[in-house]
Length: 362
Image (cartoon, rainbow, N blue to C red):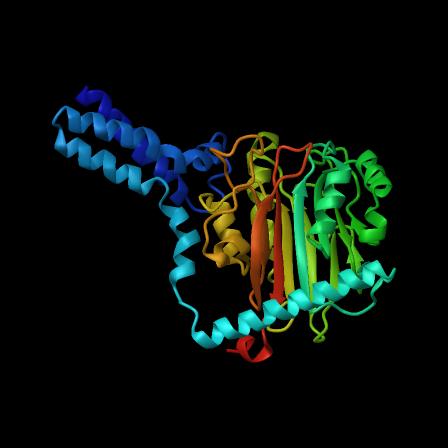
């Protein structure tokens, strides 16, 4: 019994340590999968710790207990940032005022729609963006449900991955053009991982390209949106390869997206946003390297826990594969997964607001 417990303790410790590898070295099979599953090692470790305690082996009990705590330790980041700074009364008043303004704006938009002047035809530059991303599972996602979710959540930018031409046709039949009349897609290629990527937008973009950064995956379409205060937001839809389609390409694609944060036009005023299925979580060194390049994860900034999006068919266990990232200068609100019929991923939604210039310049 003690030999078996000791072997598990060694295996578990090495397994957890895989998440500390240098970025890029996690790009070897089966490391991406082992690292993704490492947060769940607390379950067998805790069960074996209880067994060791029942046998009176207290040294092994504490060892296994420590491993049970270490396994999900990186996920503490998702809550720790929520407690790093408690909002002051002034902060709460400002946020409450913004929330009330948002509700009044939404109410006016609803009334306008009732009079036949829908918000989607507005030419005014937005002051904030409501974002949604979804992996459409080889184009099998329910088009009507996608459009319904986007309408109910008043989405400004919809990023879809694993898209097929037939899905685009179904989306058009479901009314996507009336809701989000502008679009920018990547070029479909035989080497795409499940389909191409596409952006649907409420507001007319100032510019758009089918592939903004060269990574070994489907094209990364991007658009530039002008905001009400004169700043710009560059939004890109990305889907890095899954490890089963090539571990080295998986890692290179994740790390390569960091070039968007380093672009010359991205800085104190202008923002870069990446939305999509990145096939990685905080446990992966390659994903942490992407964050170090200059991006912030919407779920991390919320401080309310990870947004677990895969698989959609079971509430537990799930892992976080889909992300909304942005360079500094914005705040995220209302980050939450959303169920959409016909796909194995949950959609991820968030509201992005640019920070005030005086705060951004600190």
